[in-house]
Amino acid sequence: MSEHIIVERRGAVQLIRMNRPDKKNAITSAMYASMTKALVDGDADDEVRAHLILGVPGIFSAGNDVADFMAVAMGDDGPLDAFGFLIALARLQKPLVSGVDGIAVGIGTTINLHCDLTFATPRTEFRTPFVDLGLVPEAGSSLIAPMVLGRQNAFALLALGEGLSAEKAKAAGLIYDVVPEEELEATAFAAAERIAQKPPQALKIARDLILGDREVLVARIREEGEHFRERLKSDEARNAFMAFMSRKKG
Ligand code: COA
Image (tube, rainbow, N blue to C red; front, side, top):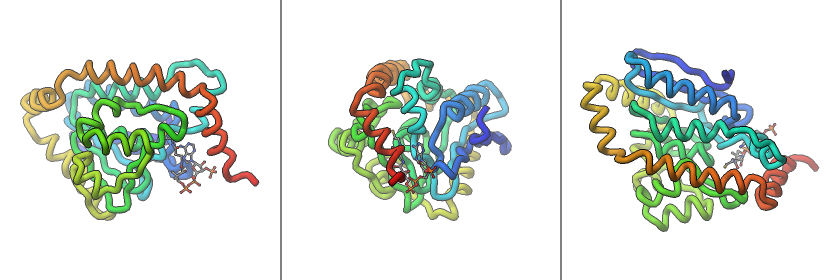
C-alpha cells in the first residue's frame, strides 16, 4: 500500500486523501492500487455510505506520474494500475464526492467525471494535456465529457489541452460548486455526510438510474486504454516525457 494515500473513516464517510505534495500529487502505480483497494473495500463495507476524495492545499493532482509513463514507454509491459482504478471508479456502488483545490491535471481532472458532486476552489484549473503528451483521453472522458460539456468544450479540454477555470467548469456542469479554499474540505465533507444520511437503498437505485448502463462506460475506458497503452510507446509520447523529465536540467 502506498504511503502517499491516506484512508480514514469519519463516521459513515470514507476519506481518501492523495498526499504526495513534493511531486504535486502525481499518482504512482502504488497510489492507484491503494485507492482502488479503498474504493472496493469501502463499497463492500455496510458502515461506509459515501466516499470522499481530496488532495492537499493547492494541489489535487498533477496526474499520472510521468516517470511511470516513461517506464511503460521504455518497455515495461506490466498491468497498468491506473486502469484498475478507472474501472473501480466506473463501477463504484456508493456516491463519490471530491474536493479539488489548485492543480488538477490529467486524471486529476478526469476523476471528477466519476464524482457525484465535485467542489473546487477559485484557484483551481482543470487541464488534460493528453494530446500534447502524445496520448489520448482516458477514464471514459471521451464519452462523458462531450455529454457533460458539449462537443466543442470537450474538444478544447481533451484535444487542445485548454485549461478550464473552476467558474467555467461550474457553468459547464463539470463540477457542482466553487467554494473558498478555506471552506473546501468542510464543504465537501458536509456534502458526503449528507449523502451518508440518506436511505442507502433508495439512494443506490436513484444513483444507478442517473448513471445508466455503466458497462458502456467500462467498454469505453478499455477502448481508450488500448490506444493509451499503444500511444505510451510512441515517439510523440516518449519525446514529451523526456522533455518534462529533463526540463529543469541545464
Ligand atoms: N509526474 C511526475 N512528477 C511530477 C508530475 C508528474 N505528473 N508533476 C509534477 N511532478 C514533480 C516535478 O517533476 C517536480 O519534481 P522535482 O522537484 O523532483 O523536480 C515536482 O513535482 C514539482 O513540480 P514542478 O513542475 O516544479 O511544479 P510547478 O508548480 O512548477 O508545476 C505542474 C506544476 C503541475 C504545472 C507541472 O509539474 C506539470 O506540468 N506536471 C506534469 C503534468 C502532466 O503532464 N501530467 C500528466 C497528465 S496525463
